[in-house]
Length: 319
Image 1 (tube, rainbow, N blue to C red):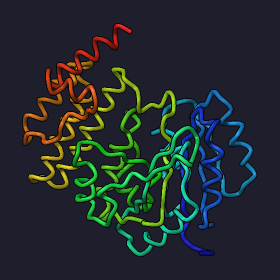
Image 2 (cartoon, one colour; image 1 turned 30 degrees about the vertical axis):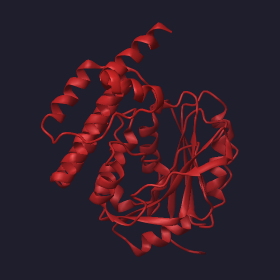
Image 3 (spheres, rainbow, N blue to C red; image 1 turned 45 degrees about the vertical axis):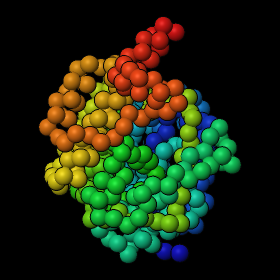
């Protein structure tokens, strides 16, 4: 494919010196040539900025520096400096297969009202030989509301930014990233953005390699600001969902989302638990089990999930 619409790949960079070159090179080695790569350094304190500046002579690459304001702000800055007809938000520690963008662009041209998704899986310890796909029921072509109901039906979803190729007109319709969110901002953004499209089309030949097990990953945060952000993100997802379609299926999904939020933060934030329970009281009973295995699952069957979490919290504070 020698010609085609420009694709903007937007990568927020924050203290990613160990991985950023692998991510950039994976994009530069795409079989699809009509790309711009926008690297937004979010006030890194390691060697990330100097590493990405090594690529400054490449005509495909734009480098932007900002003081640390978070990934959502970095993505918005990157988008505002982009010119592509299609947008891919890619994290600075993930890798994509060489054919991904070419395959996704082909499907995007054939389906102009759609967002294009892909396969994805995890690898560990910077070792791609540990990679395994994480198959999901939503790996198929679906209307957007059905895709969300399928992806989120168990109360959670891994909305990895890099799996999606988004037409610019859909980004404009949905709006930019919520810069007030620091946790689950991707869940809120992609729920809203996916619902602005007509369909999600699955690209069988596109794969994202998701780097797992990183220390100090923001997704592992457990503090009041993170819990507040997660609450607002869940609230945004559910509002977008029920505004689009309010029926038995979407109400059940909303109930499961609130229940998963409660399972996750109890007993650390009583006020947010209370607010989530109030929202849950207006919905059907959730039908998802307490997510546990091994000793935790055994204990929960004896003293209940709340007792189990209280006990684990008590011993965690004693350490």
